[in-house]
Length: 180
Image 1 (spheres, rainbow, N blue to C red):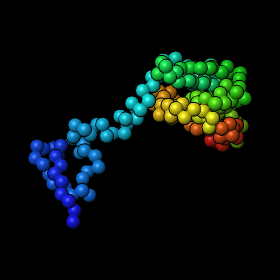
Image 2: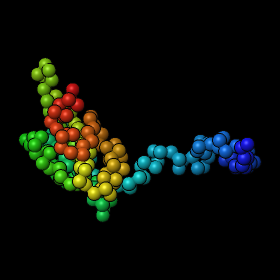
Image 3: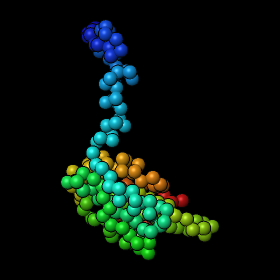
Image 4: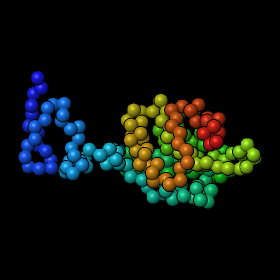
């Protein structure tokens, strides 16, 4: 036999009786507690990392003016913000981009990938790369993972996202296959 419990309903002052299996999983939408159960609110506050204005400015330069081939971003834990670590000149290529990512630390990066379609039409796609190597510290991986979505939303114009834990997951062939 199911045991009865008195649970206060958030809508009115009277207590309602529920069986254990009938207890709501979250408060009703009109409840004052409803807002703390919304995932979007918790996700924004998950890491508390701010985004430096220079990050957005440099991205807009890459997107609109093509003044950079790539941008590498770093989280400054002491300042609790994402900053620009390295800018790649338009003349630099894929090898320069991969060489700018540290082997044992997490980073975010944006890469302007230019390619030819089957009809020899030049095109480009802007890739967002979440670089989280296996050799990185666990704390760093957690901070970068919890800040990624919020940071990516700040960069309006990302076309394709890649998540890589080793160089083979972001090889030139991966960029080519994802761009088409």
